[in-house]
Image 1: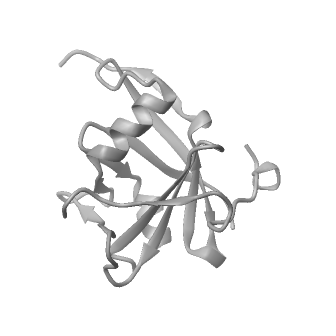
Image 2: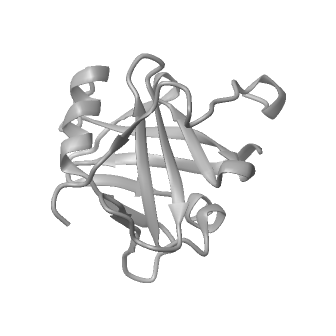
Length: 142
């Protein structure tokens, strides 16, 4: 999908804030992948949200879109952007959201890996992920 073809979303239109359990334009490499315990953000997604160390996560169930907005301070219900290892990728620990997404989208995360490309909106400092655009790949047995 080209930037000119991307649908424009606003956090004011039908998005509800997703709370963690306790605790302008399309750019290649902006995605999240779904893991059992949360959402893995690509290095490019982390860079675009930078210098944010926290994120507000929103879900528009009607449009099937997740929005992640970078924040420099932790707000009530904010997620910590946890980098792991030497990787530039990061994890948002959000098991409840993963359960909701897998149920809504009928994803089988035990058998398949899902990667959802995103579109960054600089004005809102948010990345919008259309769940219907998810790329599905068979997991290999390890």
